[in-house]
Image 1 (spheres, rainbow, N blue to C red):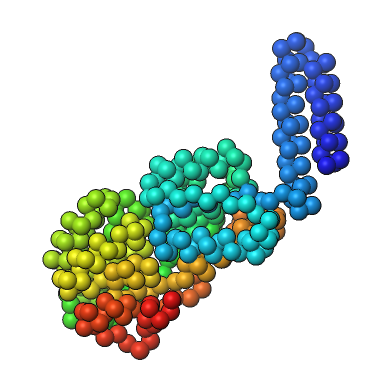
Image 2 (cartoon, one colour):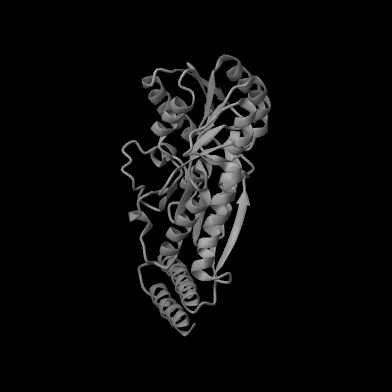
Length: 351
């Protein structure tokens, strides 16, 4: 800490000198106050880095997760495991908070991280990332389980790198291949219902893209949007009545309410193809999915590079899952009499 004390004493001396020069008493006081503030901030930053270099202070990492469900939980766990692997359990301190599906709560959580001056923020899911974008342009922010960063952050000419203080990982699976999966499993069906939460920008992006791909394959598609979980049951009932197949993207609201979907669609005999494994495990028949745990690990490795100064977040492109796996829900497929090709992996067997 001698180095920090020296920095503080030198800058305080400069503040005193500033207070003794100039053309007015008010100017002297203002100059001194500004210089002392700068001295305090500089000394604090120097001390912070000094302690971390000596291994005496843990990195403070804030985690804002939109809602609790299997996919987001796995991403958070992978992120934490990667940082613990990099710095040890005593080298990183996590402030993990869950917004319970409320975007306004995301903003409150992010603001608390900013006031605490955390070293890095993990924004798990789109609403968390949007809150972090609004909350700080200084603290490094890594997103995870975000489908399309250009859509989420309102970047019209997105080229793969956000810039500034934001980067992260995407859970986007090839949407054209998800559409092809519907064609592979249900070639004789005609009407596909696209079920999603209208409050989730990345869900809208996914269903728009899948709709275009399915129409090229000869299907008729119809949107079934709900605003929140309160009207989910009504919209699912309508979709099940009017559709031959239902498609659900990586939608956080559905992921937290798969039982509602399954209790309506399975008795009606309507198969559901999903954008990720967690939703498929609850109400789907098949998915082309990623490992959210591995996605979290990748995000954690990015965080480690940022915290140690090995990488500049403004130059880090968004990273994507390295592989995708065709999976099916054996229990629901058996109940509906659906046979899948041999290259599909049963979710029950991969757990």
